[in-house]
Amino acid sequence: MAESSVFDELVAANARYVEQGEHRVLPVAPARQLAIVTCMDARIDVFAMAGLALGDAHVLRNAGARVTEDVRRSLALSTHLLGTRSVALVAHTRCGVHDPEGTAYERMSQTMGRAPADRDWRTFTDPRRALRDDADVLLAWPDRPDGFVVGAYLFDVDTGRLEQVVAPTAAEPV
Image (cartoon, rainbow, N blue to C red; front, top):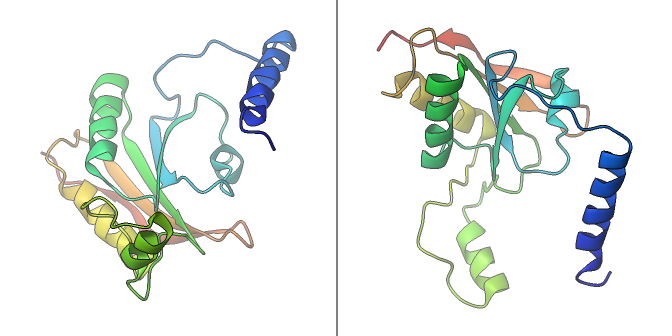
């Protein structure tokens, strides 16, 4: 595939989207007052998996579905300006950030031909433990709003099923 052809396809698909009248103007606030933090993995269709419609939830994606500083920044805006009150953390099986041998940095160094930038790559050895840890981070997060609830789930990419790892838990009032 030529380098620009994927972009040509993107623009052509957008033209069809507009021509077919599929675009809708929706409110900026999520209708279900929900944010979902999930992985960037292309196998996860967040809206279909969770029975959501466009406009129901904010979806924040990154490698490994980790609660990073940028996720907290986005959640602060979502909760305090747009009314979000619930966050579902959704990691998944067979994740590329799952690093039980602790070799991700070395493997990246090999593929890059040099050492990658010095940062916390947020890899994990146990996805359930990572979900519990990240749920704890959000439940103790100083910028959380009153009435803030966090739940955490593991999505099985082979079966499509969600496994509850952390039951929906209300944070203590700030």
